Length: 421
Image (cartoon, rainbow, N blue to C red; front, side):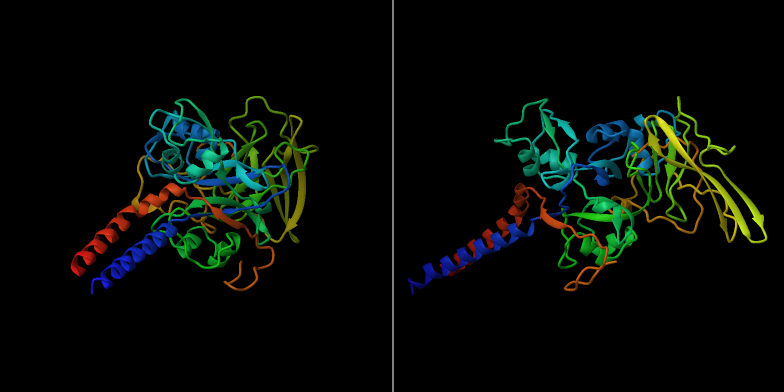
């Protein structure tokens, strides 16, 4: 009888080890990566949740981007006095416009630098300050940190952030990609519905074999956008504006917007302009953004003065005339919201509204707007559908999240052992 007890005890200990190992594996998070082979950059968005109350300028400083660009990427009205010092509430979700580069054969943003403070650790920087967009291991590797427990105060760290571009298209339509950190309440169906896409499209883009997602996973979410067709030699070549938002270009002289109602880029003079080249179309009295219509028996003659890019300090305009079945209505603009002062509970996990396609947007109070179908599992992806791959994103330090569960198991095993004695 005494020989059976050691066997029983060993079996229980082995079971405990297996359970702990299984639970540690469950916290592994994944991030979608896009292979690349050129040195060019493209526009992308980061989904960022504020870890505390922060000024607009403080958020901008975290990512080294224009604070006005952040406001306009989120359709926040910038006509408010001293809006750059407006305090944004903790847990607010923002879309951060970034330049996505090709580094070591994959797409990522490496323009963000962070200066350490006395209480900082790699884990707190990754998980809290940058809201899980990067892992402690990734920061350590990017900065050759040999001892993560020792950080010099004031040390400047490169913060590699996830981004994807997929040639600015999704199923052959213009799109910009949002790097979205999955929250505990998220489902793939919910994310798809929130961003006006499909489950199969998200699965194709993120190389997913099933619809299962975990908190901490980073998904590439395609957002419909308005694309430009400027010449390659223009400084704003490749400009793409997410539906429902704004951008500014040509040294703050030209404002562009996207939606609502269609995905056609609309550009006009910006009120930020201080010293700009001519924005009048040649051989015409029309200024950039102006349109004239004339009803005829055969339809409607529409003449427009459009933006064609920024080249060597000059604003390129082009005059076009077309015959359309009916005369277009007035230009609509994306609806602006007031600078947020609080967070609606549901918006903590479902922040980005789907663009409205039928209702008219509110004309901006200010024209200042700085820059900024798939397949089922087991079937081949749809044509023209971008496909990424996955890599581990979460820090291994998150394995400590399983410690309480493992402790309960240990106590349970001890209880069984005491009963067997």
